[in-house]
Length: 179
Image (cartoon, rainbow, N blue to C red):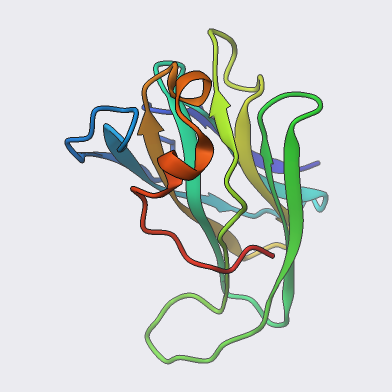
C-alpha cells in the first residue's frame, strides 16, 4: 500500500494550503502571479511509497521555481524522487538526498531543495492525476510525514509560443542550483 495526496491548482490540498499572489505582469514579459504551495501527507504502517502530486492550473502556462521537501520524525537520511512531467516525452526528474538535521524546535528532521531547470508546462482540461504535474515520492515509513513546498509562476497560456524562453526567465528571481 501507499499513501498519496493529489490535487490540481488552484484547489486547496487536503492537508495544506495554496496561496496566489498577483505580481502585476502581463503574462508575456513577466508572470501574472505566483502560487505558493504547501502540502503534507502523513505516513502509515502499510509500507510502499508516500507521494504528493500537484497538477498544473489549466488557465496558465506555468514554471516551477523550486520544490522543497521535508520530513518530520525522521531517523536517518531520506531520498526523495522529484519530478516535473509536462507530457509523456517532456519531463525532468531527480533524486535528492535529505540528510538528517537536528535543529531543536524546528519540527522538520530532513529537508532538501530542488531548483529545476526551466521547463514550461501548459495543462488542458483533465483529471487531477493527468499530466502535466509535479510530484515528490519517498518511502512510506510509519510515524513520519512528508512535506512539500513549491513556488509556481503563472504566465499567459500562449507565452511559450510567443516569447523566447530567455526573455521569460529574465523577469524571474531563481536560484542557480540546477541539479
